[in-house]
Image 1: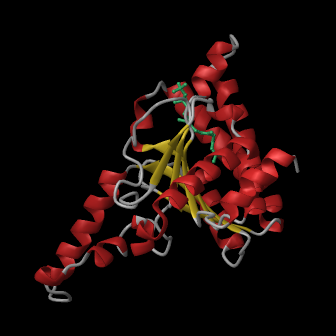
Image 2: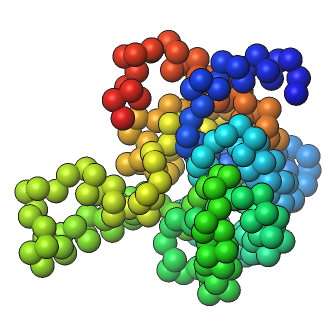
Length: 251
Ligand code: FPP
């Protein structure tokens, strides 16, 4: 480990976020800058996913949520959608054994509708095989959109109120949280977005109420351990600045 890393990590260790969520942005621009097809950018993006999971385990991060396919991504050309679906299948087929061996627990959040049955079966297999693992929980957000997720939770609470199971006037934020796809997953303390874009893009809107955001200029295929450490260090320094008055201490 380099000295710089050690210093950065020493500061970060005391305030290591339990849950880091990442908007993996910039695959296309990474490829374009090199005169390569967008598909190559996505392929290199998978390499960055591998590096990030390994680094997450090493740093002791408990939950890592990756925005792999948003509900808005359906508006991309069909060839690119097929490419992303294919990459996800290959990732699970090719990496599942090693992820399992490394103690990775895999969960998938998002809408199962419109996702092809072969991919759904692979996601279920990954979830079932890794259910008891404890090194890190990798939450893959696939066909995920926060507004749909929140609307679904509201709908289920409304149905339960209509059935007389609960009283509408007694609905609490915790009850809504428990109806989200992320049920059982703590809210992220840190959210990273790569590629210099400064938006949340319908990602974890409810869960990010108290989250610290770190925006990086690097494109996702260049992401890895070093940038993760940088983002965690930035998070830790903000946390130290607010000390005991940090809003996180209330969570
Ligand atoms: C954003 O780059 C990235 C995506 C829409 C897909 C992210 C998917 C991967 C990194 C690969 C699959 C994931 C896993 C977990 C195996 P962009 O295409 O929007 O880039 P651009 O904004 O530069 O065009």
